[in-house]
Length: 238
Image 1 (cartoon, rainbow, N blue to C red):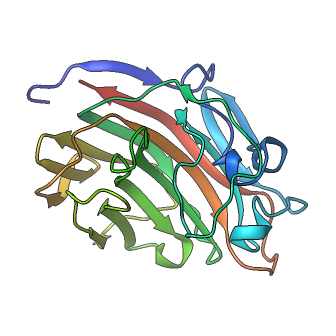
Image 2 (image 1 turned 120 degrees about the vertical axis):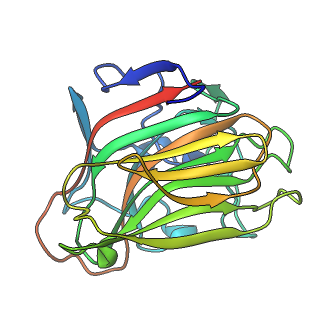
């Protein structure tokens, strides 16, 4: 690809770049520990006996997630949040600009969602925008087409406006596909299987971390368990 050089391909043989928790400061390390298998690829899963990650603030939502950095107090998804377990700040992989790809397959369970997204480190409050590379709800997965959420959310960044949409792509999301974002100054391009499907003409200009997760929503536990989000590889280009 023009102007990009492969920095690394991660098949999750080791977890050098990944912290196997989801926002543990709002809950606890124990409650947010991911359930997964890793080796030649990664499988994040929701098990039938899995408890909600943060019932005080996020109800019945269950999640298994990884992240490449951690700042205590970041990703404030509601105004009344309180840190419930202090954490040590962590920086494993926090690029500014680049192209990032994931080869994975989604889940068609209507109560589930899988996603790869980037968030600011919130070392200062305005460094808090999100680049969503792929957000796929099971209810948007069909044999002939899949709705893929992508774009930007500002959160606490006044320089970014909300620009997010669900793009209908003629693929079966239950099969393996490659989802990518090419992040440059003032612009983010989004791709599915190397086809350009969306462009946002704005961009954060500070280091960001990755979040990778599978979610199950609601009090009902239905369907077959475990709910598995399979990832073949993650690639970063600079």
